Amino acid sequence: MLSDDKKRQLYLKTISLHEISQLSKLEQQLIAEREHTTILIVRITPIVSKNPEEATKLINELYSKAIEIGYCVFRLGDERIIIAPSIVQVEGILT
Image (cartoon, rainbow, N blue to C red; front, top):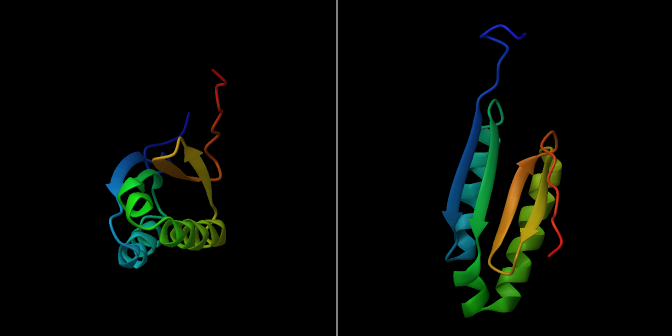
């Protein structure tokens, strides 16, 4: 069993992105919270509905940054993406 100082907290956070300018704040938050295991669920519908090209740019930039800091990006339907540390296993269930 791990001692208290070796246990890691697991956090689950949600955010809605309305503008691509919010990306830098999100990236800073992920970097700052690397001592914690944080799973982030990002709602991208507001950007997709306004400007699909901007949404593609946002997802590509977010993916690049996530990979750089040891995170993975997963699609959760058309409206959300999950950003999780590579130690988290994500399984898709086919319906």
